[in-house]
Structure formats: structure tokens, C-alpha cells
Image (cartoon, rainbow, N blue to C red; front, side):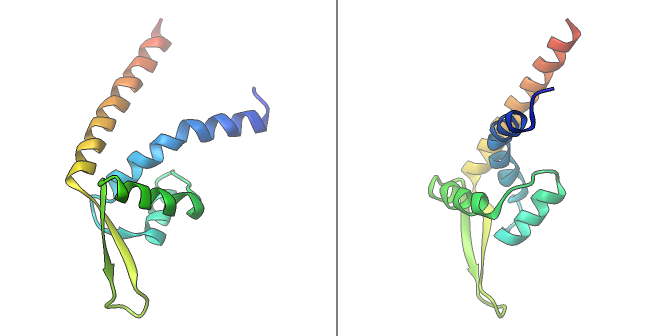
Amino acid sequence: MPDDELLAAHLQELRRGTVVLACLVVLGRPNYGYALLDQLERGGFAVDANTLYPLLRRLEKQGLLTSDWNTEESRPRKFYRTSAQGAALAEALRDDWSALDRAFHALDER
């Protein structure tokens, strides 16, 4: 078994891209940052706020998310939603994820 530091570094690298896909999937329904953090964590994708918020801004800049401010409540919140382009990317990433999963299982069977 690798040491804890080595394992943590590789797990972080492995999960980095999966957070993008998880955000695109979850944000098929509008949500704001803090609630998204909670939803991702409950789904098994523990993400630090200092990682998530820059990621959301980057995905929005790339046209993969849209956002709107909700000022009807006492505290304004920025709601994000996956754009059509983001949904198409999420579908392509899911397809690739499935292909990789099948490839790993095929390697195990050899």
C-alpha cells in the first residue's frame, strides 16, 4: 500500500476531472455554490469551496454554465445552471467515463 501522502496526491489527480463532470451533471437543475458543495459532498465528491468557486467561474467563462442572481431573498445568491454546450460536454464525458470503466473491467478479467 502506498504511503498516505502519495495516495492523497494520486487520488486528488484522479478526482480533479470528475468534479467538472459532477458539477455539469448536478447543475442540470439550477443551484447556488454552497448548496452545490453540500450536494456534491453527499454524493461522494468532497470539494473545497476554494476549489469549487473558481471552477464555477471558469466553466461559466467557457460557456458551459450560465448564471443568474436571485435577489428576492434577504441574501442575494448566484444560481448556476448547465448550458446546452455544458450538457453536450457532460454527455460526451459520461460516454468516455463508461468506456474507461469497461476498459478497466476488461483489464481485470485478463
